[in-house]
Amino acid sequence: MINSKRPHMITTIPGPKAQVLLKLRERYVPKGVSLNIPTFINQGQGALVEDVDGNILLDFAGGIGVQNIGYSHPEIIEVIKSQAEKYLHSSINVISYDSYIYLAEKMDQIIPGDSQKKTMFANSGAESVENAIKIARRYTKKTDIIAFEGAFHGRTLLTMSLTSKVKPYKYGFTPLVGGIHKVPYAYCYRCEYGLKQENCGIQCAEKLEQILETVLDPEDVAALIMEPIQGEGGFVVPPDEFVSRVKKICEKNNILFIADEIQTGFCRTGKMFASDYWSIEPDIVTTAKSLAAGLPLSAVTARKEIMEAPQAGGIGGTFSGNPLACAAAIKVIEVMLKEDFAGKAQKIGEICMKRFMEMKEKYSLIGDVRGKGAMVAIELVKDRMTKKPAKEETEKILNEAYQKGLILLSAGMFGNVIRILVPLVVTEEQLNSGMDILEEAIKICQ
Ligand SMILES: Cc1ncc(COP(=O)(O)O)c(C=O)c1O
Image (tube, rainbow, N blue to C red; front, side, top):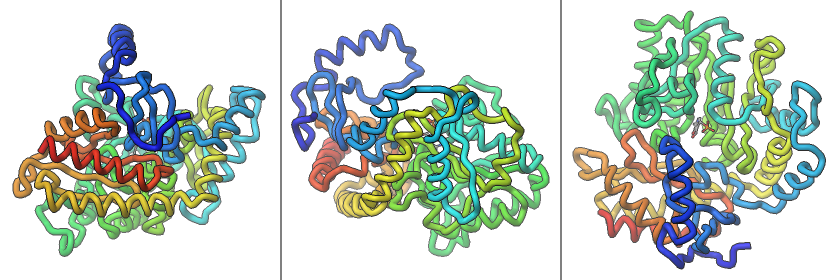
């Protein structure tokens, strides 16, 4: 139990116990496994984390968008414990277990669209994207993939090839996978065409059409993969028409539309999935992160005929769809629906947006405020006219914030976006105290 409802710091970070562990981490763990906050967790509850030195921090990062349901949700802990007493693993390929099936049934119910769907489970977001691409290729018998500039789909060889940012994700790890084509995303704050959203005619969708007429043969393209709202790329929310237009372009050209809902899923945006905003039925949906409350689990869900394309044994893996994780995920979905987590996310989003807009009035460092539901962010710039990214200031704010008890993460192609991925169980008082800390940090660092 954490004995406080608010952040409470008793040492600077890292405290004495964290310093000892950091030395060990440095000795045994490579720097490629990066670290944002130099301390170690002792326990987590709701939206709060206690570190090994007894500091209580408010978590606006949620383990990179994994804790939508909150740390240590009692109903989730209960099902994990009861599953752990029965068995931890048998492999779905060897002897089946019911939680895998019941979870697949739940995915059929919650993934956007009325078609009958099937689901396979994997262990990480990247693994689900890898499988989605394999399934798309097998179904369409085509090879190439379209991905977006600014996208993030993972760190494996295929998924880093789909990913946009070179440093740190691709730097020195080439050659990349071939047959992947990058097209512009609708990043309106930094429009590729220098247009204003009100009258841009969704030029980036036009560009995609053009590419498919002049540069790429749709006969070669198996799928287009898209985050309905870009996560790692800086919480970039495209105009409504963009997503629907892209989906239509895919339909017209016989290209499968893969919605990567790994960061946007499970109520983060104020709906169960971001795709729900545009009433589109993606051909394939990838999910992970908050699906199993922190246990490693991801999923690929698609129409029955697409999922049936791969031959037996062609997809899956030893640990895929672990029973503990499946049991937790069933409960996550039940709780999210029962307790209206989508509504909670909308409320959180309203509070954050209001606070951010007020901050934007006061601090010229804030160039843009954007988001949907509880997926909200600010983009920091050195100058509002030139929009020069304020990367160093962003880092300073993050450091200042954790010393005051707030865990934050950056994002964006230029590392100048502060994103909110707070557990959706955060109380209004906690949320406002987090916003106070963030504002204080901005004031000091601008
Ligand atoms: C949209 C998106 N896709 C894929 C991934 C990769 O997931 P994982 O880190 O679990 O492999 C992420 C992770 O941040 C993500 O945000």
